[in-house]
Image (cartoon, rainbow, N blue to C red; front, side):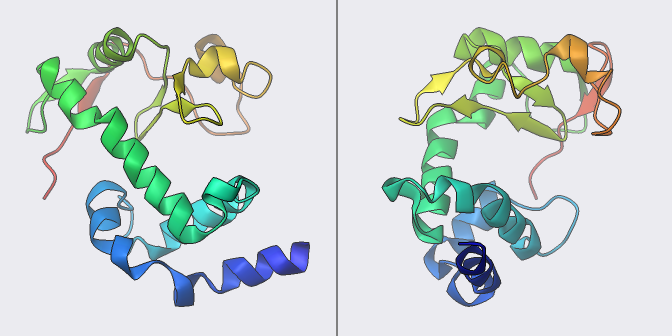
Length: 166
């Protein structure tokens, strides 16, 4: 099995779904690198190969197509706009962004800005990130104690920059 998974991961460059690249560049860019392929390769090898156990996600095309579909379903940018949080040169507080998401989705989301995690179950239904993965997910109060990850919860009053997508 490991050989097969390594084989799939190593073929990433050859078989990445070309028809998805324009949408992937727009909605799932690597913010730290001009090329997103390494990032997408990482996402596939870390999450996609595990998700591929489900027939509905058993190829890179299915996995990344589903990711794009869920991106449209969640529509994070429109949700933030409804809370008057728009891409600009302005700064917003972390608590404003977090509260807007919780009010709109009616779930506690896992927010680590640089990254916002929105959780789905196996049927792709939104659910509360903290309740569903209670054994594997750290609550807000536990993040600061998890020094090995290097992550911590932002102070609610910290300014957050939400730049325009260029």
